[in-house]
Length: 355
Ligand SMILES: Nc1nc2c(ncn2[C@@H]2O[C@H](COP(=O)(O)OP(=O)(O)OP(=O)(O)O)[C@@H](O)[C@H]2O)c(=O)[nH]1
Ligand SMILES: [Zn+2]
Image 1 (cartoon, rainbow, N blue to C red):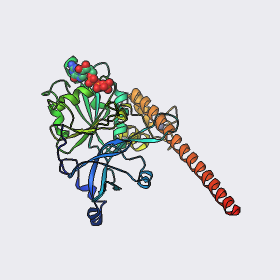
Image 2 (image 1 turned 135 degrees about the horizontal axis):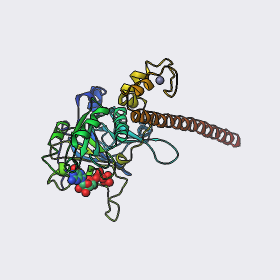
Image 3 (image 1 turned 135 degrees about the vertical axis):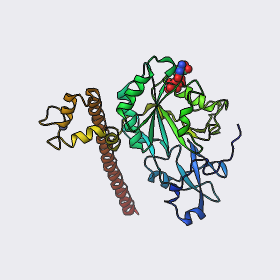
Image 4 (image 1 turned 30 degrees about the vertical axis):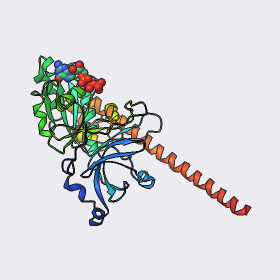
């Protein structure tokens, strides 16, 4: 499918991004949005159309976590070179698989994260809470989407349960296979809005994306990276536009989000527990048999769900572990960086003596 030209607004540009740019920046370059990350460069879309640009090493090293799909870049006017990575409004990240515990960026500058679960087998409040904390940490508005409403005898109970864990979050029940049923999602899908779906396998994320795509058989990102045999490589990250003009980011990592160090997200997702905790007698109360614990008192009174407290504790532990791993990795990197620099210095000195 040919790549259309988009205006900056259609690509999701918002006035806030310009805050960090000077007049000089705008003279030197133009904004472009990353729609895919390839081994040989970044695929971008801008008011000038599609291009592949290179991120200089110095710039790549300075941006942590790395540039990802959804990021806005400033591209040099006369060369396909990145001048700047524009400050992100939001970033969904995850802890990398493997042992080095690096933070991997998954999607930048999302407006809405649809947290998808089904009304039947998959329905699980603790899992929803986990995703909500991740969304809050990322700075993205979550919307809870309950799929398979057409296969559920008591949708109202599911809606009520979902609302009970997050009174400020919108909850929508739909049949993901029906265009009419998903109409309420339009509120978050205006032209230029950027969204993503998270949720377990089989809950209907692809079905929903397909229904949103309607008859537009294929996404128009034009950014698929094919290897020599024409296969779609699994490392490609993707962003595509819907007929309504909203963008969907669907990167592989989106489906395997793990809790990183998400203190701020936890506070937002469990503000009820944190408000209670402020009333505990001891400021370092563990809410586990401690004297005069307001949190445990609320459970005893029946105003706080036992399950919710248990989940809060579990996610707190995961957050603490992730924070510790990140700290240890940084210390490790610093230590070995120093050893390396010392070794290089000794080598230079030795060379100097040999002359
Ligand atoms: N009746 C009904 N079926 C649905 C609904 N949503 C999804 N399904 C069906 O559920 C199955 C799984 O849906 P998918 O869209 O593949 O789920 P997914 O979340 O994309 O799964 P992964 O790709 O594994 O992450 C498919 O057979 C869909 O047709 C719904 O709202 N109603
Ligand atoms: Zn307590």
